Image (cartoon, rainbow, N blue to C red; front, side):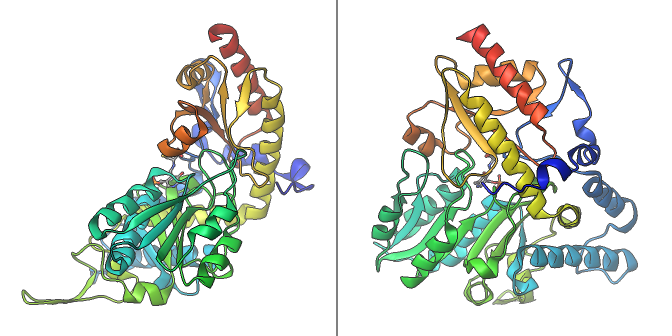
Length: 414
Ligand code: C6P
């Protein structure tokens, strides 16, 4: 946790809250406390206005029309790609592929990178803390090729077992796919060390950045990851748009994932040739307004400064971890040293769904269940957890209300 001493006093959280109109409402007679940001975050006016502006003034299909609106839409769409490139410090815009989200990005790599490479007996390595989106695409490609999936364990606090990671890497390993931040435990994995290690063995690394991109300053060149996947909707942008970053030399060698319009150079009934990067991987009409909205979200985050956002969220995590630890019978699942602003927990004798229902009655939105990480939940030896996840607009007052809500749930249900 990198507590930033300036952030406590100077982070303008009340001003930021006014940028998010949805927060200003009552739920079941209480002011909304939205603590379900790991599932999806809310949208600032800057994003809503950019989408509104696109549809009111500039909307047309991109890369196709020779008319003013199509040119404007294309310019805005490609400007968004440039914003993403700068935001994650990719070397080229050609390395930024617009996809529907993290899930599609991982499936693309599984089918276009891994599938042609894999031979029976080859190995794909993942970890015990992966989201289904970073498990099932690999299971599918293993079924298709005869490759095997290996899973690196975690320890009791929710950190990767690095010794096991090291012993997993061998000359049959073809790809390591792991999450940057766990959506259940909040663990921030030491991906720089892991990528260095994998590269020593000549193994490519895909990082699932769905939970990391809203919280951390990202530099894909410094990380040296081969692929990095993330979703717009968790970083204050729209849903239905996301990014696959890939190193250019890898993407150049990969076959297209989907076939259709936009991804071709020439088409005949005998044979088609494919467009240059990034369009080779962008078949069909894309989510134009979504990409533009994502660009606006990036502008918004840059204006505030990712380092200040991270410091604010770290402070909320510290505050919540301390306050929740005071509740008798509550156990936090995930106590890694390096943690992001996600707190999952169980309370003796109360089902997580019932906790979430009581909290909803008090206007507090959290997620309860398996969080699309069923193997991890099983590994933790619980049936489900309740999860509170904090974003740049959350406050310590909201955490106080969460704690009061949990005491009420205990009084009603335990
Ligand atoms: N996790 C959660 O409540 P999509 O749905 O493609 O935008 O993101 C999938 C995904 C992949 N990896 C991680 C680490 C994630 O957290 C998610 C989405 C949400 O935890 C919705 S299930």
